[in-house]
Length: 635
Ligand code: COA
Ligand code: AMP
Image (cartoon, rainbow, N blue to C red; front, side):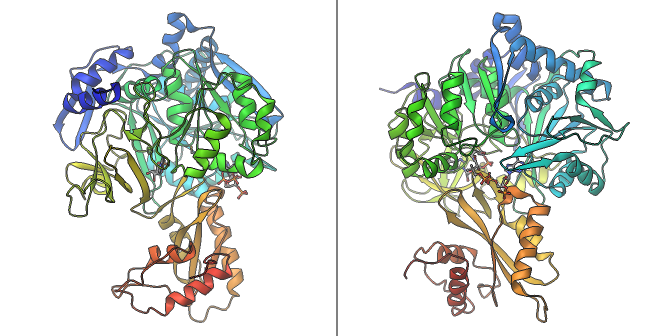
């Protein structure tokens, strides 16, 4: 006997064209495809080649046309602004989106042009994304916690015609003025956008410099609504930059057709929600979770989505999530485990839960980092609903492995995101490319072609796409995660194989931080590692070797580099700690032993590598780590 998940997985791998061709019937097409899967130019596979469509039409207009016009499409809930709640029906959302598309069109934005959004969690962010999609243009959302320098890198790569931003973002205890950051980024970048549309929030009035800067509200008042522009299914919908191994982020490309098909499918197959249900992803539109599950997935499926401008704790307390769930009758929620660790820290017995009616709440989904068993058990015990860990990446756009509740609910194994989702041929490979035995750790890879919505390439960087993901294991996509699969096909994701670290569910490159540290005039050499943290999962920690003759007090150099990372990468890097050492531990061939340093910091058992050039240095590293609060345990 097989279950619906096994049948879907098998069919999706044996007959991908048949499987996804049927799934694609859930989308309205302007013109059907010639091929479900175009494999004529491997490793560049294209889904729904020849088809024509519009993503905004499918996410918004068609629901109005099909009788959902009065249903809530988007609820903006902002404890950061004293409890604002604003609901947009599908009809209202369509009208706002069409009007803003008219604004953009008036500023010269046409099919294929790029528009960068640097936005806080306000409804205008989703409206702008959908408006760009409506015109067949390409959006690139940059998370508000990134600094001007990071924004400038993305401006130079994406070359936007227009940018959309707001006067400010709101963080607990702090208002972040976005306009000076935007202006600085444009100063730093070589490419100059023609216009910036700014949402003036009541908290801060930004200084606008006409004719480049345009006031959102004034432009909307004068706008002529724009219609949906037909694009090819294979045309890009968006670029989302994510951390790579260097300071140059990777521009993940998402297409229109495959993205719609896969995301719409996941809403039922994975999350088990129906059109009309309320679905809430507590993330940020700057991350892939925000793209896929605040904006596109729920709207494509005709659900009500929530944009929450707040935190799990402190806005005002650790009952914030329960308040939103009960007030808006949320059926399914998605967030990162770190958010639940924060709630558990502030309200260990979940006492605040008793104040809220949680009767509509059916499932909690967690992703962004591994769900540690303690957090899983705490959430299960207090919420009394299934808690589902699922594993995915910016690159894939949706789950590689999940407990697909709309197909078949498997028993949960703590520490595992369950099994490969339909479309994903997951294999664990040894360094030589052979599959390892079940239970053995290796590189987790996915056999090509990847299913719809996964990245077709990197923006203007086909060669980097091949080098980064496809060359090491020919015929496979390398996820960059290491782990194993058990006898029943449960996947266990254990660690990254590269220098990416995961801080509060945010993906960061230690390589990028090292580039900043090395730029300090007194730093001769440096390393950044991710150390274990009870709340955020990992935190970055820097090691600095100062130049001979450096005159400054080492403590001041540490302060400088902390400031530099905040200024150049952004507060989201959460880089707050570094230590000065005499030398870095290295192999005889000069490779820095970051893994060994991390094990010492986390008080884990380790073997002194046989190739180390000077074993005595490890004792010095341990003492330095103890000086900054790590490597405390005996041994
Ligand atoms: N704009 C500007 N700054 C931002 C920002 C934004 N959009 N988002 C975060 N920051 C800042 C924070 O204010 C903080 O600054 P600080 O150093 O001055 O305190 C810094 O970036 C680090 O932020 P974060 O790592 O999020 O830590 P935090 O202490 O503010 O909050 C959590 C910790 C766990 C509450 C928070 O990370 C959280 O809610 N995470 C779960 C949900 C999530 O976002 N997941 C992402 C992918 S699903
Ligand atoms: P991002 O691209 O920011 O979504 O980060 C993707 C990375 O986060 C993955 O490659 C993993 O390293 C990690 N990750 C995301 N979800 C999970 C999960 N459920 N379990 C383990 N790691 C995860």
